[in-house]
Image 1 (cartoon, rainbow, N blue to C red):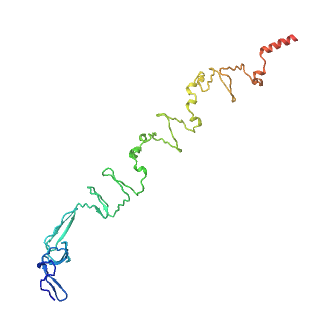
Image 2 (image 1 turned 30 degrees about the vertical axis):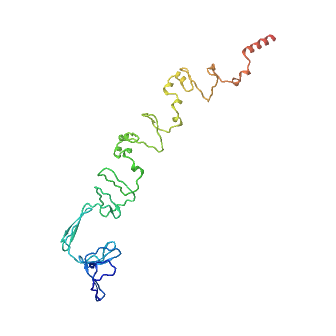
Image 3 (image 1 turned 90 degrees about the vertical axis):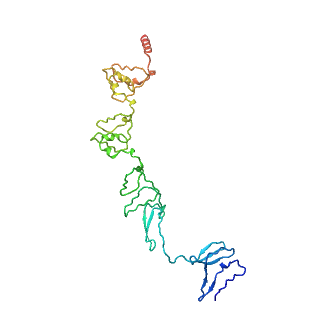
Length: 309
């Protein structure tokens, strides 16, 4: 069956040009006559074939055109070019027959590679073939240009790794004993001598003081007594000097004071004990004065006794 007339559908606003010749051919084929793109009509969608490319289109009531024929087909390439972008350029051979495009990679500046953000810079990153660099934390490496960090067999850096080199004595500076004077603590050891400590010791004193331990030995408790508790060695050069001693002992020159037992002498200040020619004190020497009569009383009793007799 074929519709060869161009009758307008009743009540439509279609122009004579917009009425398509619709023919139903053998096998159920619907033929649409080619033409120019129609204008939009409110309340209608339009299906048509353009003469310019023989493709099927649909236009909405709002005037939006949609191509319904899939892209493709055959044709002739007339021009092929490559736009240089992001460091990638290229050249084209046989552009009008079988184009062959050769890409050239230059200074590529991608923002991300496999999710890894890359910041544009002019630096150089070199990774030896078959090697892997793994970073599990956010790190910043800084230092002097041309420096090399050799981590050896690896490990965890200790706190001393971040201490300034000025806090240490350079290894080469300890090659001689004299160099130790420039050390952190200013230790000075005479060449060929050894300083050995088997215990934790603290040595303190006045700057530039000297401790001479002679032939050595074990220090006694008196070694830790203040010098104010002793008489200076030079002050005991004379007997008179003993008066300035700790206990104010006074020995006349050429005389000897000897004590063979532990004695305690006590009494009133400035008192004098005259033992005459000496001897052994008897038991009565320790009696108090109340146990004796005075010489005057004794003499009076002696006169009375003589008179009575």
